[in-house]
Amino acid sequence: MIEQPIMVKICDIREESPDVKTFFFSKGNLRFEPGQFVMVWLPLLDEKPFAVSYLQNDVAGISVLRRGIFTQSLHDMKISGTFGIRGPYGRGFDLQPGACAVGGGIGMASLATLADRLPDITILQGARTASGIIYQNRFRGMKVCTDDGSLGLRGTVIDLLPEQLKSRTFQKVYACGPEKMLYRVVELCNRYGVGCEASLERYMKCGFGLCGQCDCSGQRVCLDGPVFTSAELSVMEDFGKMEITKAGERVIHK
Amino acid sequence: MSKINLSVNLCNIPLNNPGILASGILGTTRALLKRMVENGAGAVTIKSISKEPREGHKNPTVITFEGGMLNAVGYSNPGVEAAAKEFSQLNEIGAPVIASVIGTQKEDFVRVVEGLSAQKFSAIEIPLSCPHTPGFGLLAGQGTPQATFDITAAVRKATSLPIFIKLSPSIPELCSVAKAAEDAGADAITAVNSMGPGMLINIDAQRPILSFKVGGVTGDALRPIAIRCVYDLYQSVKIPIIGVGGISTGRHAIEIMMAGASAFGVGSAIYYRGIDVFKKISDEMAFWMQERGITNINEIVGVAHD
Ligand SMILES: Cc1cc2nc3c(=O)[nH]c(=O)nc-3n(C[C@H](O)[C@H](O)[C@H](O)COP(=O)(O)O)c2cc1C
Image 1 (cartoon, each protein chain N blue to C red):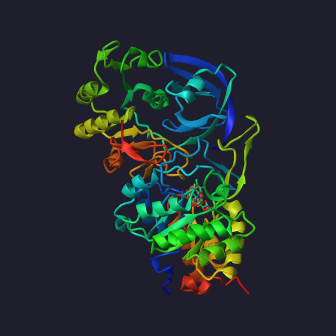
Image 2: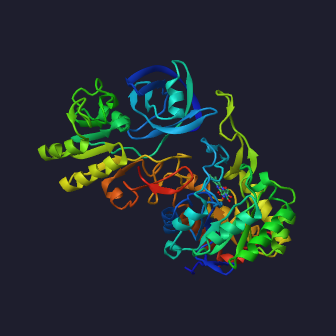
């Protein structure tokens, strides 16, 4: 694990969609487990957590959705630009064959290295519209849906999932995306008696379980998570409901 | 096997063991306080609360190094109104809960203490010692004997709960500040807050790592300083001392109590030893005492003095 940020050089950039770019960098001898994240540092600006979305031989990648000043600054970077990383942090997924992965929007980035490692996995990805879908060439058999029907089926992964759960018995369902979606995925899995692991997102500071910023019902999303099992989530009252702002105020989850 | 007694009485607050969760570490929510008590903390302190909400400094805010940690969180907190909601029904936490109160003016401290008065806190801790937040602590001149006296006296009028004044290890007039707090009616001294400020630079980025550039040093590097501060304070004030700084094992806890602490705080060690660090420390203390035939922890307080 790297405790203080090391500066890595961008060796390749891939446009995954109009708003998502993947930045590849040499990973040296760092080991990442699917579902873990790194803290990405832009000196003088800020530092934020990102899932590791590619792991290939010597190279790792993070897929970044443009949504604020920080991610815009990353998007402006060119090959051989540098950023800092520390980590990897957190508890990842427990890998099992015969599984299904459900990704909502950029949430797919957290599931991608898991899907690489599980060749028989069934993948569902949903987004608002066609331009929000990523990794279409990477995962050929992926089932896609969009809210507006501009790509794949019209609807959400929540509409798609029951059919999948009815048609065969999955060993496990892995999910990452907006928390309201995760909440419903967990509900569906419980109804069909399938174990589920969901990766949560919270505003983070230290990344290693000390500051208490990313609390979700007494669990530290950065260290105890970000991946939690459906059994764990069933006793986390904040799941799907409350999150904590930068200032530490408990607010209703968007 | 004789029965080992780790319970202490701190300003009439009974603790089943002398280990206290330090302010700013996991004390952001009620659920985390509860979890720390389930994991063996004798008491817990909430993250410091100001009158208004504060977002704190940008990341990176906490970084580790070989000898400990450097942090400049910048007192992010939801403000007194939201804090009063978050920290309700404290009797269900399972151990005494200490409120940590900050302000830029002495009136602010009073406002926050009053705003939290409906909740069942066991004590009020006032840090006048943060080295990295403009408007607060050392950067606002709160670490002088006069400012400490004024703020303590104002809070004394506003509450009947025990008041702990938390001091910086990085001021030469440590003992006179502590005396000023005692004279103004403080019930205990918490020693110490993070030291410094210090700085770590990333040589490849050629920039300080923390966004605020400087931050407070905690963990192992702080321990010898904390031990010395507690030792000196034990000879200058009569009120009890809560020793904080780099405590991560039972032996460290015993060391700071021998220097004169009646109880001890733990922060950074949660990173090094895990969320159950309090259980581990209590077990290690009990083991050490058992081997030496000491049954009551209170017997060791201050024994390092001539
Ligand atoms: C991340 C972090 C945040 C802190 N926040 C506060 C705070 O809000 N209020 C406070 O009085 N002390 C704060 N402190 C200082 C601790 O309470 C404690 O005095 C210091 O860390 C020394 O103890 P340790 O070596 O066991 O960590 C903070 C320390 C750290 C590492």
